[in-house]
Image (cartoon, rainbow, N blue to C red):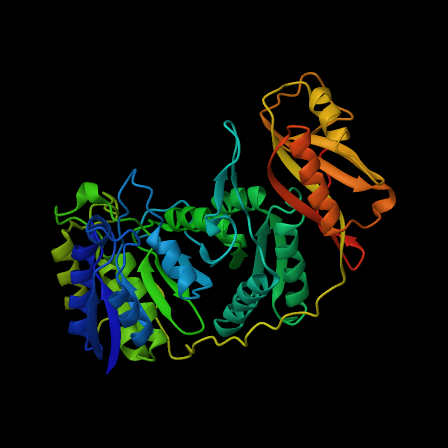
Length: 478
């Protein structure tokens, strides 16, 4: 008997969780449930994290969480609990299997069978944001080598485990050469360890276009967090509906299974919600727990129900559906089909499923790190770069020079165009000629000189070389 944690969530969450648990129990799943409360009601009780300490303890004790969608109150400044749970529990990989069920579920892509593997802990989802000037806000994009290695290696191990033929990487490293560039670099390193698996790479914009147009050319696709969030929803929707795709969030200790859709408060309580996504997540959970026979039994009953045309309103189609079913009726149909298998769709077979275990990522030897400059970011309300440059040049000393000023990444001094629109946020780069090193004391003196010149420095970024290679981007036009 496996003990799991269950969170019924908000909106349609309780309805689809009750339906899912009914199927699990009817199929004979060997499970015990510890129920916890998450989300909106916890937030509104005064707990700004949306989860209690007791709930954390239960999740960490049981290691497996089956979670329905949760709601975050609007306009209250609350952080996303979904993101917090994934990061706090080390759930580094989100896996979504998006497979067409044509001709029974309407889709323009009847041959698609794509797995999206999304990095879950890093990228812009660190949620580190600041308003730096009256006109400019900032969000930090954080990508680490260990984070890249974990998710990319997981993607190749997944392909190996499930006999997938190809792993594709999506990034935007033609623009973000350091962050997305690192992800691509690690992908190229890891792929050499799996010569039996084909691999390729797309810039994310054309990759997204190809997924929307010809998803059948893809197999397993791995990408950073934000791209994965967006593209996995697109991929799920074009396969038939986001309401049918389950997902698993994988960690080295804990694992969370959840539907990929939201809490849909507009249809809550109407008895029309589709429990398929959560039910398919539960099937993934049973496989994780080693209950493969029960997982197959439920998956095949669900596929048989799809073939029979018993569909909830979100996927009902006049051409292929036979009954527009309520949540309860749909659940009853699945239970009635337990022990049966589909006649046209491929039968579920999980006999070869095994959990994917990764070794802890090893940190590479630290490179030689040399401070060669500093970018000082200034809040200045003027519009003429030459005027702030005059103040900045008066801050220079001991061979340290003002090399450039950019505004929103575009060089505006010493070269620039009158047509370039400038905000009140200026990046001011100071370096010695020939990239001669600076000291931390030099940076402190620049700060002190900025005060003397009445330059409002609101942020700084040190410029480092790592083993002689620049660890910073050039300014546009530099």
